[in-house]
Length: 356
Image (tube, rainbow, N blue to C red; front, side, top):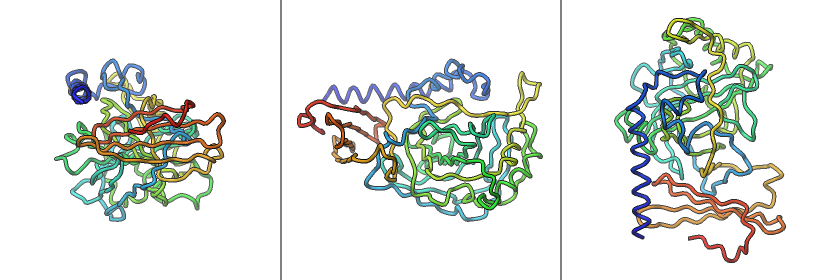
């Protein structure tokens, strides 16, 4: 048991030092989407093992029996915001104190999180504009609603803490049917011309942040990752909704007209502000819904929870009952220690496999 404790202590110290070292090097403002491959050299955390975005494989995601529900507060309340072009994206910041929060208690989601900002990601084609992919498929756009845990003083403090940040990711697809999208897009693109130049802002007025959520907020994927921009801190819990929003193609084009600064003086359009997908490594993606894909037929998932020391250990046993030879996978998560482990396609004598 002593070896186990020493290992956990060593792991915690490595993560702590890695996060602290980010702020001893180059400023996070000294980066661009034209040198993504160089991010890890300027900010080592960008080369970590828990980076975002990822390509979510629905067949490998684990359905949790105890579904995590998100409880939204004041998302349907009118809030005044400022629209800003920071040279990397366009974002919307609340201008005063508010009570727009999300609360959840689950394996990855624990606490009450308050909204910090909303920003957008798009690409240079209509079909390749999202950072996250599902089953290898990109969407036209991606909206990030960034929140921080209210148990911390502010966003700057929370972003350095485990379970400090929650980002709701909403994928967006281009649609030719005008009746199928909400009016928020028309209001936004009308204001984009005012903030076309980098480092400009304008008073947007008031809006309901509920406009950025899909109608179905019960079905989503969740995993632990990082910010998708430098310094790429690995303190983010991601929620990627299954359902998508729709936007007219002519409105999406307005986002690509926004400008950034290159070499301090030269301006160019932000035609793409997406980071490529990062390796999932040992992380486990959870989902709150049952898949209807044919590959999931005949798959049974059993869950057990144990307390080891002061930590809850959750184990998923995924059994492929229609496979010959018999096959199974084991997934282990220790949320409080930010640890996950998995072994897939075990085909040895299943009677000899022990779960804790």
